[in-house]
Image (cartoon, rainbow, N blue to C red; front, side, top):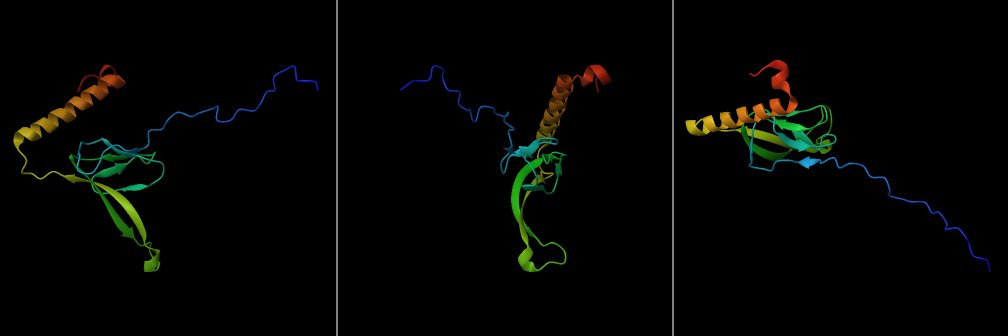
Length: 133
């Protein structure tokens, strides 16, 4: 029985791979968040923005003020629907800090936010373009 003189070329599967998207929660319940800090990166609205939380065009949730991150569930009833049509939604809130925290801590938070903004300006080259602010 004759044998093949050339190796058979089979098809390959799972050869191409896409880059990781790094989706998911970036902060957990009870952590201290600063304005502009990313809380969740997601596709669609798995989590909805709550108090002091904004949503970007790619559905990324970010903090709008200094505070502690809080996750909660809430049922939402669409208008004109039966109570059995209520949906459970997950919300993320940033609970603002009370005004009774010390002035030293307030200054430290302000310094941290200012330093973070300086680093962002330098990395994006905004200081050279628009001048130091």
